[in-house]
Amino acid sequence: MTTTAPMLTLSHQYGSGGSLIARALGQRLGWSVWDKEIVRAIASQQHVAEGYVENKDERVGSFIERAVGFFGVGGFETAYNIPPPLRLSDTQLARLTRRLIEDVAKEGKAIIVGRASNYILAERPNTLHVFVFAPMEARIERAMEVEKLTHTEAERRIAGMDKLRTDYVHNCYQAEWRDPQGYHLQLDSGEWGEDGVTELILWALERRL
View 1 (cartoon, rainbow, N blue to C red):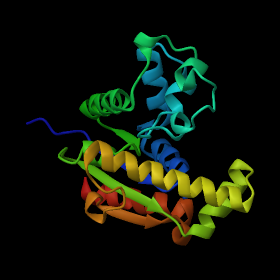
View 2 (cartoon, rainbow, N blue to C red):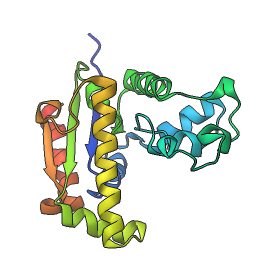
View 3 (cartoon, helix red, strand yellow):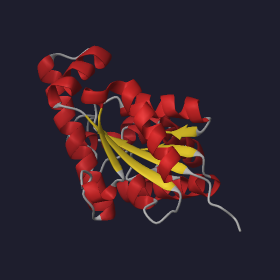
View 4 (cartoon, one colour):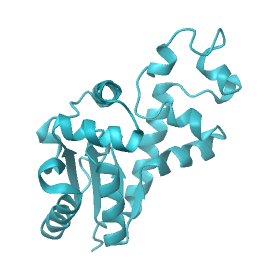
């Protein structure tokens, strides 16, 4: 009997340290980590600039695209010099992202960061779905430190990212990003710290998988 290789999906709030926790877990487990790697893979497959995919990643009706006139009359696509046949709609990008995640899941022993992966792989056996969050002030402090933002800028960035991720999951999968039923485990990195959250996830993986 073939056993499905284990996997982890790790969704997180911006400013909670989720991406760093995923990297730490990847090193400890010897698993691949798919975060910005998803952007690079899709950009390579579609022969477009990574920056183009990154600015549309996890977005529905990208805020950049909605900023009328930000790039001039030609808009977002023209700014990146993307010829019409290679332009990716939000729906196309979501479809490509899902396909890539499903391909990674065939091999297992991987960590998928965000991108509604917990819903894409909801029926996959031997998979642990985790959500990492933190108190608002802790998120603001991290954003200020890492991104070199002012307090006000950090608040705006956090609010914007929360909305983008909420809209992405809702529009693409008719689900709620913060719905506790979408995860096996939710952890507060403000309470446990990055190292503590990493250890708790390793503990959960051992017992669940």
